[in-house]
Length: 81
Image (tube, rainbow, N blue to C red):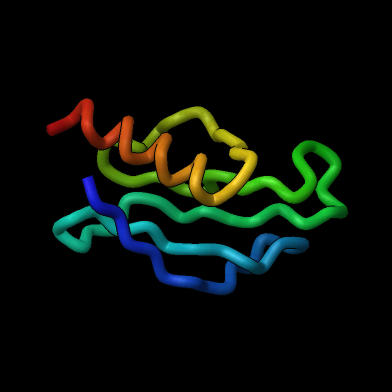
């Protein structure tokens, strides 16, 4: 499954770097935010700020890097095909 992403600024209070993640039909499936080094829980990691469709209502996740986040999203979406 192919995913595309678009950089975006997200107003979370501390973090602003984020990406919108789209599926193969160009539907928005997730908003990921890059956590700053000031973050107390997962500094420098990527966080699932919001999920849509099969990712909606999922317990928030933090990922070591953007590739890991996208692979997790691919796996979740593949379950719904």
